[in-house]
Image 1 (cartoon, one colour):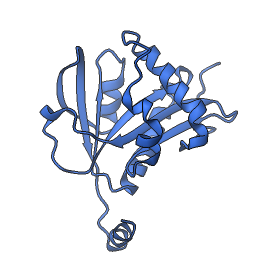
Image 2 (cartoon, rainbow, N blue to C red; image 1 turned 30 degrees about the vertical axis):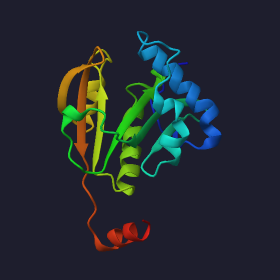
Image 3 (cartoon, rainbow, N blue to C red; image 1 turned 135 degrees about the vertical axis):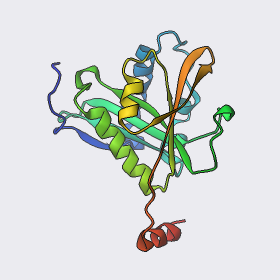
Image 4 (cartoon, rainbow, N blue to C red; image 1 turned 90 degrees about the horizontal axis):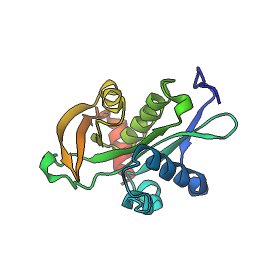
Length: 188
């Protein structure tokens, strides 16, 4: 397939239970390609518990991008941050972890990654998330630069389980208008 010059014909939507049979294998295969050094038989806990963490949890979501033929061409997710990196010294703000941004090679540098992230940010703000956290690795070509362009800043670089890891965060602006605050209080 030739690289598309436009993402106008791409539909971004939330993943539903009905989408799991195509989305989960896509994510697992993409992970294998990006991380060939990892044991492909060991599936990470967020993927083993995909429905619970991304679909059922109040602050979780997983978005998919499909072309006009329905082909899956990109994904991104967020899940409640579990504070598994205590050395990061993150405060108690409502934090989610941005995870699993995968874009089909034919759609890279087309704006699709940015479009997926912008939609995810919109969902995060609707859920009153205050901070987005993510980590990436220097061997993922262009990832650090991409996240800087999206407004993330470097929190720390260190070794995590034998891999050089770049920890990043972005604090989101919160809506403070009275009508919005009342609506949020009523939905609790």
